[in-house]
Amino acid sequence: MTTADFYAFLLERGIKPSQQRIALLEYLVKHPVHPTADELYSRLSPMMPTLSKTTVYNTLRLFVEKGAAQMLTIDGRQACFDGDVRPHAHFFCKRCGRIFDLPLPEDMGAGRFPPGPERCCVEEVQLYYRGVCADCLGREA
Image 1: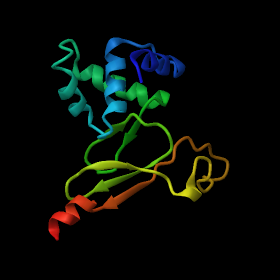
Image 2 (image 1 turned 135 degrees about the vertical axis):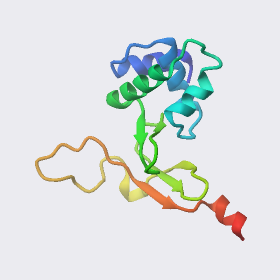
Image 3 (image 1 turned 45 degrees about the vertical axis):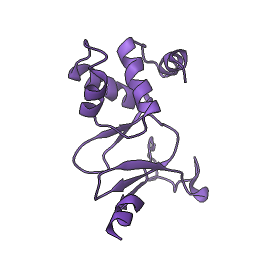
């Protein structure tokens, strides 16, 4: 994706694009490592001296509200963020702390999740797997 694509993506979601917002979104999309807000700030502030932690937190909150990013609370300690808003699952390794994307099983594609509670409007469904990743298991062997 180009800067123009990120600009258009934000506009489509009702978010006024700025240099900082585009940079945050671009990082999330191009680095699918599910960073925390503090990690995003640490990565981008050397290249953007005017970036503040408050801006990062407020921008991420706006992205989540407008559907431009997902907030993950899979590890129970801190919120992580994902720039991939398409339906997919996540795996959290309890040993190394890494979070990575997983495709949804064939029978759970978009629109195929079990129905939500009656008379409720489900806006989001997240599927998490927790365990030990193949890399950590390989180091044990």
